[in-house]
Length: 497
Image 1 (cartoon, rainbow, N blue to C red):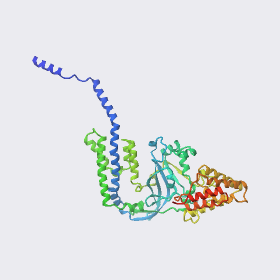
Image 2 (image 1 turned 30 degrees about the vertical axis):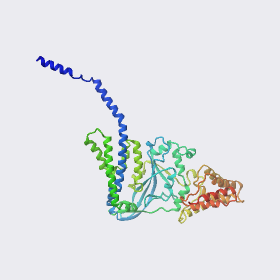
Image 3 (image 1 turned 180 degrees about the horizontal axis):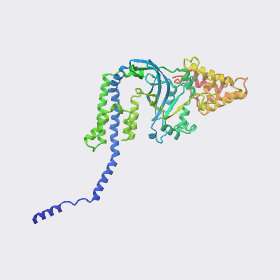
Image 4 (image 1 turned 90 degrees about the vertical axis):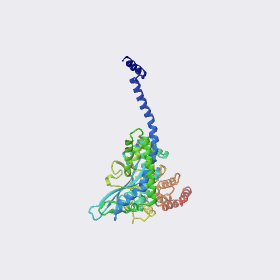
């Protein structure tokens, strides 16, 4: 018995003493700190395979299974009808929170043409539906042709800005509350804009106030018809005819094979990335979390960059840009008019001819309605010039002088949107001996400023290009040699290359 107790005492003495409580807590805290330190690195590493997987899976889905599902869905769209655009706007969006204090907001911004279309049929009251098309990158002044040029919201799908009672286009931009607040709170990015505008919001309003372009778009281009294809059993679900015609083709074997390969590689990368991100979880939980999103692939394509931002924001931003460029021409979202992008809840900018910065020059002109209407922008420009000249001729001499003085101020301030319409009237006034000296001097002063650098040389991509160049050629025949030489140089430089 004594020997047994002695053995127990020796065994107990051989065992190490237990850790004090403080030592256990220390190990726990150190382990947590190490996990927190390593976690950002793990998320950064995992974000790369996850980001590439998102791009591959989205692309594979679009070129493969999505084509088959679309062809099946639109097989019953056998009826057709012509709709008409009753409202339209350009929806402008960017991530104001991610933008922070970076100045170039237009770099990450996207623009989308949206229109509300109405159509009539045998079903009774007219039906209405909204369509928002491709998401287009915005880079500086490239937003200008999105407003007034002959654009489409998707391949073959027409678009046109609203017209006012005079037939002029009314360029309209809608911007979310967060984005408009950001623009109002930050200075312009461009050094030129910073000299003449207090905020990015003011600079945007100023840059897009182009009344001549809007007038030519309205008088030179009729609002196009909006052909629709629809299922006779559900006429309210009509879709643009060109969009339906494209979606009815399920693709070819090569596209399906490429799509399948992209899906397989994307799924493998996805599982690898999720394995890195969720290392340490039970295998069953990790597989559930990884496979769940794959089963929801048709719905998460546009949303996954937002989820990836919780893992690594910079990688998510790059992935979001790549996804936006994958199917630029194939995106078209149909909805009820109230559910369209920025249909409600944002701010609207609309530029109407004769308002704002051009109220004193273009506002008093009696434009009337478009004659005939003109068949093209060149004839439209001629009609606009004729009405502007008739207005100037009817003014009192002192008012005529004040008008030309204001046109000169506009040009020197970089406002080029309406001066060209008054060039023939200024030519007729400047060297007319029957006119008073003040109005002749004001007219010549305006023309001198109009051809003094910086000058907006007519571009072949502008509506009414040939008619614009012809006005500079006419100015090249005036008696003032300095004005004439500069005007001829501008006309020569405007030749299409």
